[in-house]
Image (cartoon, rainbow, N blue to C red; front, side, top):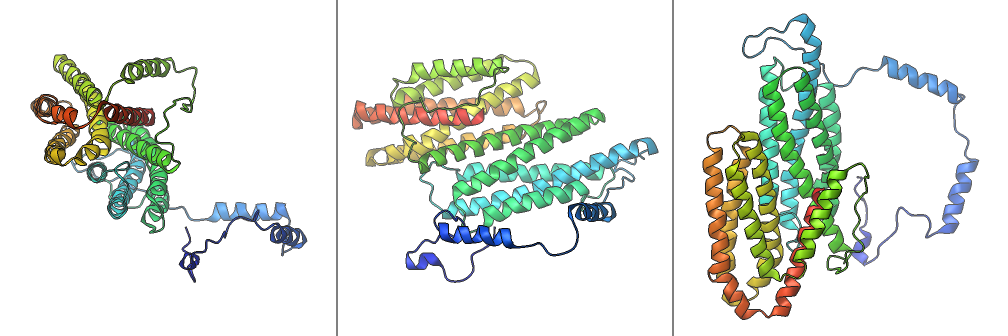
Length: 431
């Protein structure tokens, strides 16, 4: 993205169209005529040029450096037959390493930009961005260790790492450019997260085929976290784009659009279930809607407690995590700001925000644990206790009863509709 040089046209309250030609048909006609009259220089025809390009392709040096597996950290010597497979594996590990390195820088830069730009509470929040940044850094460390374990050098820029670095560098340029908006940065981040997800998926499948079980499990954990990153970024992009277009408050859902896939019966069933749930909640005011969220999470905790299989319990936690993240997001971006406008509720809002911080901290800690970790069950129990305490304090303590006293039914219904639309946007973004 080239920087503008020279006098800033905005300094004189004048916006100049520097890219489109439709606004100046005379100049565009002259441009087309000039292009038609221009004769390319050189004596080569298309076939000769194609031959020259082929020579360059065949004679050109390869990009990056091929990793040469040596002696692994545990003293295991790779035999000749496995050397090619390990070289490929190290190349892909190097690719992931390069991308995660840039990913950490990417979110650090985006965090700084979001801190400087006001988003009115509807875009990415600092805690979410820090969590993503920290997970990218953790992925980088895992890859660094894996490369060493397979006898590689983590400082070598492998061919795939070279490609990944160039891709990520372009995205970093967009995010670090002082002219780009939060929405434009999110557009770039979606591209980064899509590439990141596919990269981990490929590496995990390669590790599985080569019989590296531990690496496969690490890839699966990283892939799950990257999926969550993608869902969050998509959700922020959708919400902020709708807000820019002034359609965030549209009452009708006739304009809702979801790509259709007739072969995906499971997705259709999920959509039907969501539609039924939203229909049952449409008439709920803000307090009723939030109380329904509390009850749903309570039921999810009870389901998780009854599960014995570690892998299934981890999946149940992921569902709890998704529900809690959605609930805290809509509360913090819509409900709490509206409540904080009333002097009598400000202290209660601050107290609830502190409780949210503790819940988010526990979610991050549990999410990092392996399914067989001895700390998984105890921390899940502490999370349940914290969430139940928070729900009880809001519903039966001072907040909800005080809100009923201060805010009339019409305003609570309108606030409930806003919360409902925000929930629906986040769920649509996760699909």
